[in-house]
Image 1: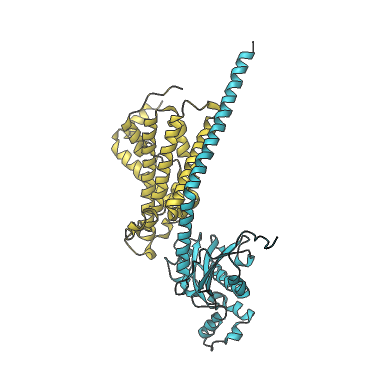
Image 2: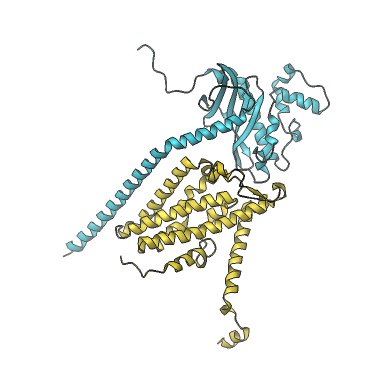
Length: 245
Length: 231
């Protein structure tokens, strides 16, 4: 007697389950199709954006390759992130012209600040641009180039030239290059003026400025230590096959 | 499932734009409204994305209203919404990458906008496709207009511009569309910050209530008649 309602109920359950499964399958199919339709265009848009940012960071540096594709992945916590970060290489002929390091400044006021730091082969900063941040609108967001020119003050500085700048500011003769190369010396000068260093902070945004400055400094230190490797290594490829086996 | 008595088209439009406006009256989907509505371009981008999502979900939910067994109707509606939002997000990443980056997490979060599930459950799952589409258009436009008013107002007060960075949404033709009233330095910073969003939305709601109050004199209450009618 009970069999009929039971059966109807079970049939209802089956129908529900099958409809749900069919729905999921259709959704997956739709999303997969859309993804494959747009992935190429999205990648191209991404590359275009990257090329544009790289061109901004590399302005004034002659190069004839495509840095956006001449990329090296570096996993080094001193660049501010436990994840691998990109180093883009600009070359003129086969000679290294400049490298653009992606650097993360984790100590921003609103969290991590992502930057691109361009460094000439001789160690001078070409330009710095913030590419992503969550700093306060109107205060910390003036690290963006379109909001103020604060970020351009790093251009032309290197690990040693900052000490020269500081020497000049204090009315002392600039230090020689060899003195400036001393780790402790440049460590002191790559600080905000209020911390005894050579760079003025954005007014009202000391934390943000300190984070950015520190990021640029770490990028320069990394570049100094890895200069040869930064340009020498080939683009990351899948593991090379053994040559003769 | 039988379709309820159909509301007229003019009622649908009135509800969406004014009488039951999601941003000003039913107060649905406030999170993106408050978070992203700080510039005209962001507001327009998110508003259009929400409108497109709402249109697609309302139409699909209505088309499938007799096919979905009631025990799994809710999960399927959520699945439809999540899929639609992801489709919108994928296409935006390909065709409007700048805006995609500017909207950030709030684009995928359209899934959690209760406005969309609300319209699917309360309206589209019981109505014919054409009505569901009109409902989506009116509700979505109502949401878009509030978002736009909020975004333009906050951008103007906060940084003195309207349509800054229009190129993110419209491409290179929009170069020079930005209208600058005064220098960004003289802006009232709080308008761009989250508290400014709450204040601005409060003012908009107050304005709507004021207009509504002025339009309907029948609400006027004589204090004497009120006291005399008390038991």
